[in-house]
Structures are given as C-alpha cells and as structure tokens.
Length: 155
Image (cartoon, rainbow, N blue to C red; front, side, top):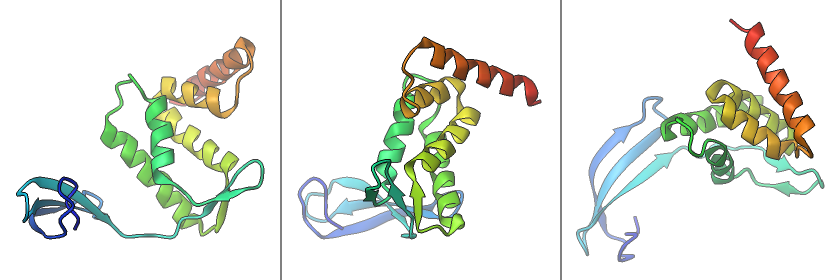
C-alpha cells in the first residue's frame, strides 16, 4: 500500500477491524520508510448501475459524489457522519439488489430524498430544493406542506 506521506510502497498492518455490517475492513498501517501511520478501508467491489443523466449521458456511479451531495444537505445539522455513510451504504445496497444496469438520475435523487426525509427533515428540504430546482417560494412552501402532511399521516 502506497504511503500517503512519502509514497513508499512498503507498509505493515498494525490493526484490522471489520465494520458492524461486515462489508468493510479498516486497516491501520505503518509506513516502513517514514514510520508514519495511516488508515485504509477495504470493501468488496460490487457492480453498481450507470447513472443516466437528464441529457441521456451515462456516468459511472460515483459514491463520493452522492456522499458529497448528502453531506452538503446535512451541513450544520446534527447528523453524524456515520449515519450519512450508513445511508449511502443502504442506497448502494438497494441499487445493487435491484439488479438494474442503469438508473436515471431522477430515480436516484428520489431514493436519496426518501432516505433524507427519515434522516433529517431540514436536510431533506435542502436537497429537494436543489434536486427539484425550486423556482420560487411557492414551490418551497408546497414541499414544506407536503412534508407536514406526511408527518401527520405517519405515527
């Protein structure tokens, strides 16, 4: 494993731990050249569908892009990073389990909004305002009203 500090390829594993779901292995490593420590994560590479954009371009699924969008929506909210990562893990599991080779960006955004609604309502509204491209306060108000109705309907 290449050291992020000195770029040497020789390192030794000091500690290994498995995530609670068992799908990620966290390894603590020490560079044999500079003796600095760093952490790596191993996960099984699973085939995720391509994302079909509105203009019909196809992009490879990008975990970091999805994680970044959700993090931005949760910015300055009391949502722990591990909950955000667990949400992305769950979204990826749904995509893999669907068996689809392609997913539209609209369908992916709808899934994200569904998860965000349960995670944090403010983050949900933030994400929805960008995702649905609200043009004015009326559209924003309509989304808030729909959220309030859904809250009253669920126990």
